[in-house]
Amino acid sequence: MTYNVAILGASGYTGAELVRIIATHPSLRVAALSADRKAGMEMSDVYPHLRHLDLPQLCTIEEIDFEQIDLAFAALPHGLSQALVRDLPKTVKVVDLGADFRLRDPKKYEFWYGAEHVAPELQKEAVYGLTEFYRDDIKNARLVAGTGCNAATVQFALRPLIAGGLIDLDDIICDLKNGLSGAGRSVKENMLFTERATNVEGYAQGGKHRHLGEFDQEFSAIAGRPVEIMFTPHLVPASRGILASCYVKGDAAAIHAALEAQYKDEPFIVVLPFGKAPGMGHVAGSNFCHIGVVGDRKTGRALVVSTLDNLNKGSSGQAVQNANLMLGLPETEGLMLSPVFP
Ligand SMILES: NC(=O)C1=CN([C@@H]2O[C@H](COP(=O)(O)OP(=O)(O)OC[C@H]3O[C@@H](n4cnc5c(N)ncnc54)[C@H](OP(=O)(O)O)[C@@H]3O)[C@@H](O)[C@H]2O)C=CC1
Ligand SMILES: CC(=O)N[C@@H](CCC(=O)OP(=O)(O)O)C(=O)O
Image (tube, rainbow, N blue to C red; front, side, top):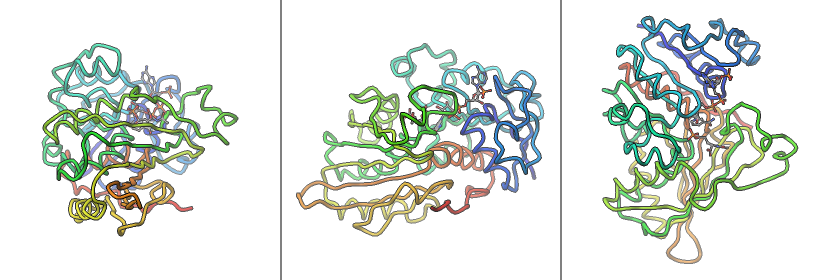
């Protein structure tokens, strides 16, 4: 059976990555592609690397006949999918790649995103999209909230350690290197080649990054008490990828053993041999996440390094993995492509 999917925000980076992934997916068919300023254009003019595909023209969301759509991917800026999902026919399943449904508490949403939620009833219904930890709920969900890409990278490293009581919960420091596509395709002054090509710079330091809301929610629920990590992302001169270096207090060998046990049957999470750390370039263009654990000469601390492609496992690959579960398809279908290297 083939399912018709709509990609809303197809002219953005995650939308284009969805198209690239779905192009070789045996059970999904791209039935509609939406854009805002680029509505009316051909996808091949917006993204020449997709020119070989036979794709529908970019249209506005209002022009899509959702009665013909089985599942919609919403790859839109924050805040837009709340009213949209509320007003869609209930027969349409939705995977939202943005932040609108990630936080269950409307007050927390308002705090981190600076606006009141217009569909709080859907916040309760939505299932958090970190597939490896929510797959049973995702199978039965109508609405799945894709995670933040930084949030996914760090959670793959830390969730098993928090659940296992293996680290000091009051001393977790996560330092991230981020590729620039995480900021989306719209033009921004601080994303100019001249300012990024030879520069490394932190952003949202000092507890200001919105993914802290996701970390607080998820880590505190696992620990059964408040957990607040320190988290600093840095822009690096790379198009894709996130590499998270997580400094934790705990026994490095025990931490490695816990990660190996957690992920031994997971097709997309690769735990490296003890003492080896992964590189951001080893997962590009793929739905894989690589994790490594390194001890330190100073006893009591371990370094856990986690890396994934923000446009793939961090958003669009994760979204297809979740869509597979929602549609009753094999979870890995269309996603086993190896990374691009170098
Ligand atoms: N980039 C990343 O690494 C990740 C992104 N996400 C989330 O995914 C979502 C999409 O991100 P990304 O692809 O980077 O964003 P982009 O800025 O690259 O793309 C945004 C898309 O939304 C469309 N759009 C913008 N405004 C409107 C509007 N008012 N009405 C309808 N459509 C509109 C744009 O159309 P047009 O081009 O015509 O203006 C474009 O197709 C965001 O919520 C983001 O936070 C999540 C994880 C990772
Ligand atoms: C480089 C860069 O700006 N990256 C974005 C990551 C995008 C993402 O996952 O986040 P949302 O879906 O929550 O916007 C950031 O750190 O905010």
